[in-house]
Length: 146
Image (cartoon, rainbow, N blue to C red; front, side, top):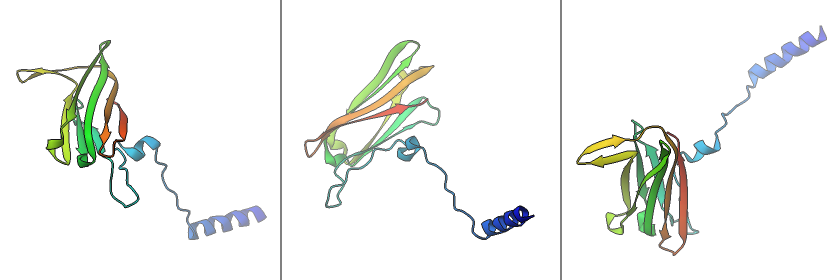
């Protein structure tokens, strides 16, 4: 009888003071594909920001670069495996493009506006390397799940 009364009281109290629960956020979801900005002691951003996202049809990688005024050079490479061989695409961002730029990197090849997309893509990695205006080198790798 005492346990029934004690249980009833505990249930009643728990409804009066509900516990706040929050969902766990996985580490890979925290960054969500965006590079962290580096901020110096004066509060100014000194790094660049890179945001790779798969195109809706999953046949290309859309990459957005920002704060490029903080870098002296930036280059990128997309490497993946398809049908047992390694394929990829790469390039660089020129300083005269301004403070932001975007790229669309296809998982496939194009010739005369006819594109052939690769299938069964595995081990896709997007890598950005460069040098900041301060002279510091950086490398950022993203694993792309297709």
